[in-house]
Every structure is written in C-alpha cells, then in structure tokens.
Image (cartoon, rainbow, N blue to C red; front, side):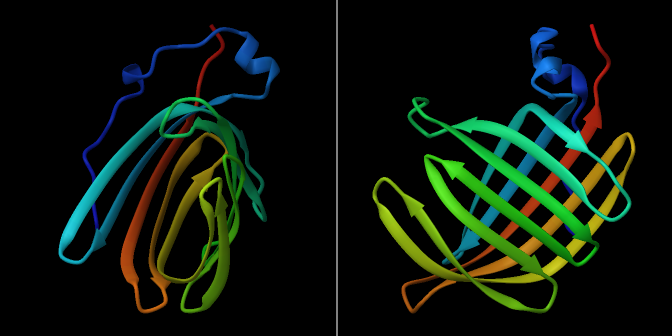
Length: 164
C-alpha cells in the first residue's frame, strides 16, 4: 500500500469565523502523485473545506486557485461507497470524473486551453471516513489515447476543525 508522510493540522493557518458561515468546517490535505513515462510528480494542497458526512454519502467541497493564482475553481468529491467516488470540478476546469474500482469511465476535462477526452480506471479506493473526518485513498489510471498514460494516487486527509 502507498503511504505518505504524516502531516499535522498546525501547518495550516486558522482562518476567520467567516469560513464557518461558508460551511468550511474542516481542514483538508491532499497529496497527489502522478507517474508517467518513468517520472513521478508530487504535489500537496492544504486548505479548508466543507465536510458533510453520512453513512451512505459523504461530500467534501473545497475551492482552489488555478496555477496562475487568478481564477477560483470548486471541487466536490462524493464518496458513495468504498468502491465508488465522483469528483466534480467547476470554474477554471470543468469535469465530472467517476472512479469505480475495476471499471473504466470516460471523462471530458475542459479548461480555457481546450477539452481533453480520457479514460479513468480505478485500481484502488480505500475510504475510512467518519463523523470527524478521516482518509480517502484513490489510485487510478489515466489513458488519453495513444499519447499519454499515467497512474495517479490521491491521498486525501480531512479533519473537523474547532471554532476559534
């Protein structure tokens, strides 16, 4: 199983109570790894998020900026069961991605530069989420025709934060 370094919540500066009014009740850390053509790229995102837990459906909603830091985008991750996750992106990137263990799903991923069509095949989905947060690990293949194939791993850790 893939592992990542343990991160602590104190790496993230607390935001104001205004965040709670927008529903941002959690601290989110996403460690992403992409391996293609023998090279591995890693990135990390630390942010606040809205976390809505229920036994049959859990939602994680967060906002991020594009690479230039100019435009906002929203991502909604929905965990329906331990082998089915949807990721909906709006804003600077538009896509609805379905990750279902052992199945391949098509995706149209649109940005200002154009639209790419790709296939996603989930190799592993491991969800250990509860009322106070938890962890979601997704490992999947991306296939963009004959031009590009990669393996992605997203290690998402979320915890409720206290009101300050």
